Image (cartoon, rainbow, N blue to C red; front, side, top):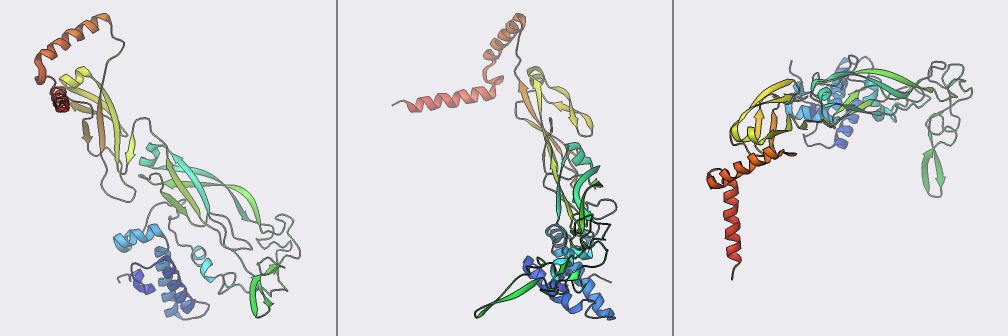
Length: 377
């Protein structure tokens, strides 16, 4: 059975804004949520369709891939860690911001929970690691749910008491003349609950700080600016709320030989004047080993040679790039007396040959001569 178009599911056009996507999803989710339609299998199907559509269209990278390639562009993906997909579905991280004010604490009455904060980790890679991929071990300073109180903040492990001031809503209304103002509850700070017996381990916060180690698979072909999302690896939520996500930002360090331009690599290759004049073969490096580059006679500085297939395989698919080698003719230094005499005699023979040996120089001199003649009055 063919999959339905995600925009059609949400009743949107392809140019819909982020706010329109969220509003459309919220409307459908409120209509088909299982808590509002117990035992209704048809509502469950519609709810899952809306969830899948929102998960893709609310993520800029996934949405771009879906717009270009359809469902095939968002199936699989890259950036998993420990068997996770970078875009792995997580019920809590998609719906917490939408249902927080509808069902209160993910459907749990009497208290309010909050999704954990997202974390960002800047990962530096060498060019070789970025091109070929690697297994990276990350040490992340973060918070985790307190085991002593199961994240509730109470020493007894029971759920906190409902706040008597706001009755679990987290906010109160204050009447000022003709106006009624809603503000955060001063008793519970917007939590909807009060901690009457704080946990001795976490002090009633429900979380404790720690450093955790993650093994992350970096896919081949990533580049500076690429971001890998690890669902549920961020900070845990407060009062047992869902965890946030971890975003690994890639930064590729400068390479001593190569520079990268998308899928292509570039390098400068210095050659001596003899090889430039007479031609020959050079051994040049690539990321996969050495290759021979044939230099034709009369090669000038700036001449660029293309070695196909020695660039980068893009992480999002496509053909492998090429390596471009730009030649620089190097002027010899620290010459001996004999070498200087040889060059002087050689230079005299070049002057006798004129344009035949120095086409660029002769052409430039002709242009300069005409320029000065035009200056005469």
